[in-house]
Image (cartoon, rainbow, N blue to C red):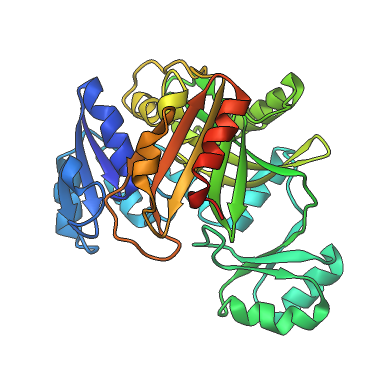
Length: 362
């Protein structure tokens, strides 16, 4: 099949690497021929030009997207003639934190208390109802810690609202948690479901830096609880493809932080660590193919993000159980340039390799 991707970043690049062995061809709707995916398939540089978007659509059998910040108008236009997976409902819900949280409430899935905020008066009222500390976020376009402000005292109200630049926002109650987890799952066009094991994530300044999978000390009941949240969401919105839940583990209660309707940074470990990677399973799902086995190959796995500078890549290559993945990007502060996966049959060996590559960790 000819698979089109809206966007041409590193996620599209890794989707392409998984698609070619399955006999598919790739197309990318990009903003630049310098994007990371541009060498892995026919690239249509559109700059919101309807004619280019139409040419891209005509050259595809099915279309997917690599970020929830994708223009939903483009998705709606393309879906008039060919299938776009995941559908526009998945995209619409996850583009707006208010709609996302409302869906979680409807499905009785735990999330932080929240209120929508459009001005300082709204913010003051929301703080009175929710309490402090609380986090103020823009309802749209936030990622990697952008568009967020932690409010610890009422004296910060004006500063917090100013940081939102007048955009519609959401105030969320602060969750006291012991660790951050994520669950990556995939749903096929026939409704079949597969889950990867819960992973534990460590962030620095809002950016994911380290993932360990499977997360340690996870009971079967906690894994099943996360999967029950996932099946409710996937079924409700009839999602096709990979979907990721970012979760807080708070005294063995799982609280959903965010939903991502796509392959996810915390699932990159699956490239070497699982029988079928999240990228291959996404390709399988959107092409109406049987989903692949999501069980792990190595007992312990990790993923380290390469942020801002490439660092000592030779050291990565010299580490026996490490695998280097670079995205063909120029160095820039806080930019995701690549990642390292580590596979091991013992936790001690895994930790030793992580320590050996500590130059990449804050």
